[in-house]
Each structure stands twice: as structure tokens, then as C-alpha cells.
Image 1 (cartoon, each protein chain N blue to C red):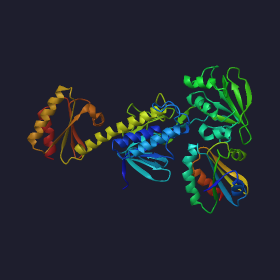
Image 2 (image 1 turned 120 degrees about the vertical axis):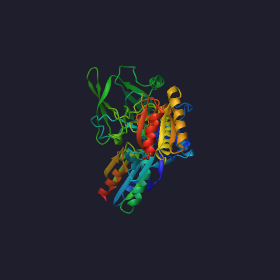
Image 3 (image 1 turned 90 degrees about the horizontal axis):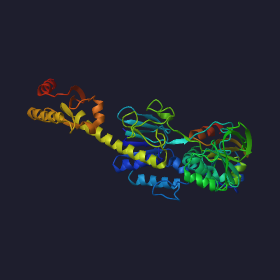
Length: 409
Length: 104
């Protein structure tokens, strides 16, 4: 039998790396499975100036390398493999990789990130790698002294356009909005407006990319007048948002209509023991810092989950004798009285029955799993199975009745 | 894998006999660096059946553009001085191996 990890993190961007750091620091056996080098989309962003504590001059690849080293320094294993399938039901989860290997774990934190969105404009597919690009750091070198256009006007579009001006002769940003209106942050907008190499085409969208084997021109459409115009260019860079890489999760965990993973604020997905973090999750702001935050929360929640599950298994499910699990809460008087009554009973029976007390609000998952809706409740277990449940008023007679039938079996 | 540049590309790739696979990459291209270890594995597996080269496209820009490569990563397949096939962007190593098998 192959080894079982405590946590498998799928994806090595900032979310996955932060999960690795928090998981390993909690002494959980944590592995990050990442296709190729860690860093995610952040590693393809040259200028990264909004991660707190890392001011100007910080680069995406630099910060991501530091995060990866940080995770490894606490004992996180980073494996270069591509996960292609997941088995999430059951106590032990399985991640299968493209090379055919299987990795097993009690917890999966899914942090696959997102990929640039394509628009399927005429010529886009044919001219990919021929002047059509989604990655400025990958391809900017080719466009030294050439002219390029940028599609999009959010943070990524405007910031990457600025990066491209270090190489290209001109960078023309095609903006769907009225003159002067950009979706990006104000600092970047001001910088871009002041950059002499950046030119603007307003109220326009890309209609077609033309070229014989290499990009030669684009056709733009003015959305106000409907007028088409052709413009010569050597390169077209798309920064029009991203799509989550959640294909392999379809039908396994709940996704929304755009394919993002639905979680609660503990990063729990619809499957127990499966968490999600980073850009692939339904969330308000997708940035390196929020990805790292997700990763930290997911690993922390996973640790609590493992402790809760592990404790319950050892104390209750694997116990060699009948167990009464008393669900109580410190603020509910009746439940405190019930617990003391139960303690007396266990004493009198001289060790033939075990009592496990559970603070209901600290063990919500266990309480929910056994259908505990009222406090106090007592759930009777024998050989790991539920045999009876008593809720509300817990009298000595009722308890004794249950126990007698259990012990005399 | 043989590292080629603008000086050696002609001899090593265009004038070579048989199939030559060229991995166009650059030090700033993270997806290229993701792919490269897998390409090296494939190169080892098919050693003798084709020639395997890599070219730093950033340092050999004009040469790359002359090969109609303006995006990374790109894997080009050459035979008798001509490019007979090419894979570009979102390349999975399985695609590379499949293309290589088809051409061998």
C-alpha cells in the first residue's frame, strides 16, 4: 500500500504554496502536485507591486520562487506531475496523474488556478504563436521595435501593456468603453495615460486578425458607429479575463455556471475533506494576496477537520465497547445536567460503557452527520455503528433501557 | 538536447539529415520552462530516431521570426531543411510525443 498524505494540494500557484506552508507548519504531511514549475499565473507577471511587504521591483517569478522555497523549507514536498483525475468520495482521496501514478490523501486542497480566456475571434486560433499571445513575459522579446495591440482594459491588460512598452515601438490598447474610461486601478491608468508609447482606440472591439502565417493587421469595429477599420500591427495580446481550470471537477464538486468552485468561507467544497483555494473559486477579488489567503484558510480548516475526524474515529468508532456520545453545549443548562447524569451511569456500570462528550458547536460536522438537531442528544455507538439516539429530555430510565439492550446483546 | 543558436541553426537543423525537433523557449517564458523537462525526457526516449535541439528564441529573435515563430513555447519539426510540423502554445507533452511518433 502506497503512503497516504494528510494533504494533497493540486496546483502550485500562490494559493497552493500558501496551503503548503500552513499545512507543513501544522506538521501535516503535505504535498503539492504541480505541473512543471510552481508559481501559477503570478509567475508570468513580470511586475507585481501590490503584494504587501514587497514593494516596487518585486517580480512575479521572484515572489513565487520565494513562496516555493518557503513551503519547502517547512517540509512541503513539491512533485512535478499533472493531475488529470480525482477520486473524492470516501475517506481516502486519490489523485491520478498523467503519468499514471496515484497519490492518496485524507484531504485534497484544489488550487488549479485559471487560464487566459480566448475570444475565438476570426484568425485568433490560426495565428496563436504567430503574433497572437496571452503572455507578455513569454513573447514580448519578439516585438522589439514592432507595433502591437492589447485587447482588454482591466488591471492585467493595462499593466501588461506597460510591460510591453519596454520592448515594442508602440502599444495600442483597444478599449470597448468611452474615451478615458478603463476598468483597471487608477494608479495603473494614470501611468498608462502618461506613457508616450501607449496609444488608445476607444469604443472599439476586435473583429478579425489577419495575416499569412504571421500577424499582419487587425480589423477593429467601432461599437457606436458600427464602422470597421483595418490597422497594421505585428502582435495581438489578449488580456480579457480568465477561465478556471476546473474541467476535471465537473460532476464531482459543485461549480457555478462559469465553472468556478463553490465554497464556504472555510474553503470547504460540497465534498467533505475537499477544499478549494485561489482563482478557480467563486470569489470577489482574484489577486495573489487573496489566493494566498485562501490557501492559508483551506489548510487551517483542513487541519481542524482532520483533528475532529481523527479524534472521533479513535474515541468512538474504533472503541472496543459500546459508546455514548453526548452532544452538549456549555451555554445549555439541561445539557450539562444530562452529562453529569451520564457520568454517574457510566461509573455505576464499571467500565462496560464509554462516554464521549462533544461540544456540539465545536464539532459541527460530526453533529450534523449524526443528525443531532437538539442539545442535549445522546447517540449510542456499537462497533462503529449508530444503534440508537435519544434527544431532548434525557432521563436515567431511557438511558438505562438503551444500555441494557446493548450490553446484554 | 543540443543547444542551437543563430550560428549553428543552419548546420544543426536545416542541413541535418532526418527528423529534427526544435524546442523554441526563452528564460522569461514560464510555460516553456514547465514543458522543458518533459521534452528532455521525450528526447531521451527517442534518442537515435530524431535529433533534438533547443533554441533560446529571445537571444535569437530574428532567427525565430524568420522561422515564423513569434510565440512561446513552440516546438518545430524539421526535415530536409523544411519545417514540416509545428506545435505552439498550450502544448502538452503527450501532443509532442504523438506528433513525433507520427513523423518518425
